[in-house]
View 1 (tube, rainbow, N blue to C red):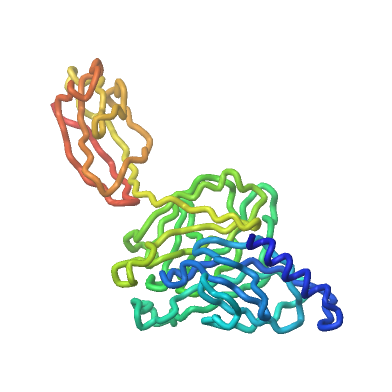
View 2: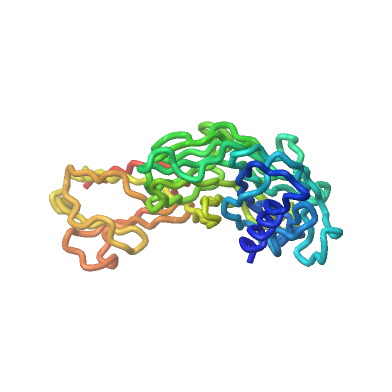
Length: 336
């Protein structure tokens, strides 16, 4: 329905030669990332014509052809609007011929009713607009993306692909980065206030099916919903060129390496259980595991049993540990 409305709108404008003279067009993708509960669904009017009906939070359009070189009045109204006269906010934009843009609707309708941005940036409802947007990756073997800091109560942050590289460096609210190109793999993305600071949140980004594609990755929602009218919580999302929005699931994980250095002949081979599940089977003296992922932020019961064990009930020794999200821990088994 939304796509049809916008396509119809663009067709009407482009065919109205007696009213406008459009030698060329531009392309625009619109992303709704305004976390204000009052803007959960909006109607979007362009030059008085309904373009998006009931446009929902955390959804996006595909790239749409719109007139270039002429003023476009973009009005945002409640999802229950009956005409352009119900517009809450109006924006005037002019698109350059042959250019490709993304417009991210962001912010809150009444900033005084929400938590202020820690860096002092205005959180008023607006459009973040960026040009030179790609609809495909430069290399067909990679995934290209830009990142949008769209969480109004979050400070300046880094986004780090765990054990890989920093992908976003010192992005403040309203910032839109340039393009980053990465192989289509599964990444754990850690969001931190600054390099080396504790992790605020982590997400799993599965890009394995996106080779050759492009995306707009956007931080969304509130770090502290209780101070923001219990609005949606912080998350990471990606809008693809076709308008599909992908959610990156939140994750809390640590990495654990285990070394068996207990010289007791009775412990020459042991089984290791974590929270009742067999992690290491017949783990031999003077061997070590690589780092393995384990849950973080929860109590881990690590049980050591004979190598002939049949279940966690055969545990001889039990140890309890809670690991921090993103922490690398070495567990050395020793003694008699």
